[in-house]
Image (cartoon, rainbow, N blue to C red; front, side):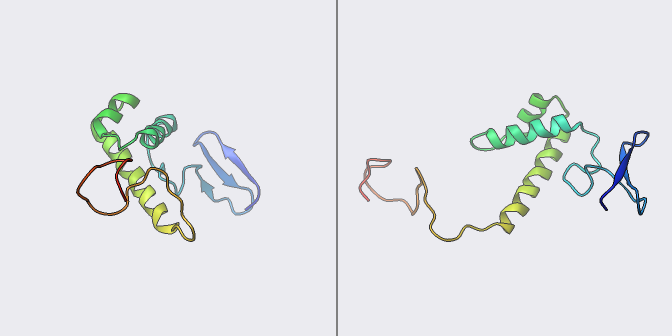
Length: 115
């Protein structure tokens, strides 16, 4: 529907035509979560900005939540990222920078290696 209004008592939106109520977090990774959205967004930032991957213990200290809560957040975010990766595949000409493709070779390693 195109028109809705906010029900401030329940923090949801209701359609003007069909009167269906929905939340802004409905059908998202945040659905049903009692964790503030600001902490979710910080978790997404820390997960995306870390070079390798962030641990649940480190995330729990950074966003000030329980370790189990941080583990649940990371699990949900990684699952969502995995679903996104299955939808979008690379095709055509792909250019990489500082990439290592292939197996181990004998000799000098790194950028100065032959081949």
